[in-house]
Amino acid sequence: MHKISIIIRLMLVALAISASATAQRVEFYTLNMPSAFLEGGGKVFVKSLTNNGTTEADFGDAYAKAFTNVLSSNALGKDKDVKLYNPWLTTALYQVVGSEDEADFIISGDYIFESSSNSSYEEKFIKETSETVDKKLPISYYTFSASSSASLAGKTVITKKDGTAIGSIPFGNKKEKSNSKHMEKPSVPSTSSFIQDLRNEAINKTVFVYSPRLDVEKFKFNNVKTKNKEFKKELKDLVKQAEALVKTGDFNEAGKKYLEIAAKEDNEDVNCNIAVCYEIIGNFTKAKDYYVKSADKSGIKRINTMILVRDKLKELGIQVVENDF
Figure 1: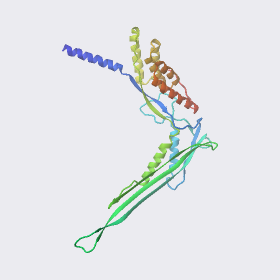
Figure 2 (figure 1 turned 180 degrees about the horizontal axis):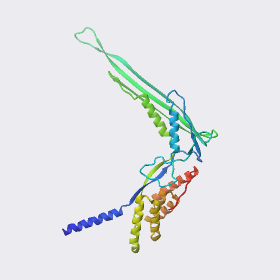
Figure 3 (figure 1 turned 180 degrees about the vertical axis):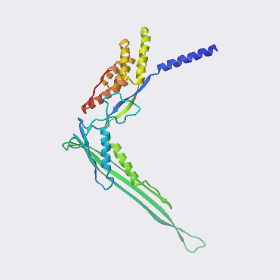
């Protein structure tokens, strides 16, 4: 019984050490920048696309509305379960306006939908000879065929207010299906279903060209230890307080607490945690300083990328304020 008791106590101690050694994991946002920019930023007007065909007259308006909504969104791609702590990280790089006269950039274009569907049958004969019949008997059967197709061709054109063209985005595709069966009518998708797919595809592939997306970044806070025995108890209490603040998502106060720890014992783990707090709240300048102090190569690489993002936002007229704790 005594041996079992010792084993149980050892197991509990091991579990306690394991639990305390588990690093805190957090989620925050980075910005995945678009493939193209309207240099200098400014005001944008999106015109309805011109229909060069005879069908889908509402597509031009639907396309313009989708483009406008994407350009206007300040949190495109944001996960509803993850809080955005950085006050200036935004996906709305431009100001969308309601008329060409107000705009620095005008987005317009044209499109054409075409579709066709066919069904037919063919009568065929099999000649069969019987010993009891003097002549060949024609036996007929039918082969049914069906086909449908739809295509979309168009482009979006971006011009400056003075009419200077600065870019275009082509879009379009073709979908088709054919089938044949003996003695049975085959089924093929309707042209309307193809057209709906083409509409969605064109919108999803082009309206995001000038808009960034928020992406969730997963990171962890390092476990903080001390070699100073006199400071061990005080450090333990401060670390617990900092971890509790991280758990509640109060990264400003958590950062202050880690700075307090750093003032007593400066080490790489503490500096890395300070850097993470600064990165989450949007102070990339100080985040880099502390990533360098912590010698965290992956942190340095990521924050350098985010500094380029920050500087690009500034170029596009976004007000960037790097708040301190």
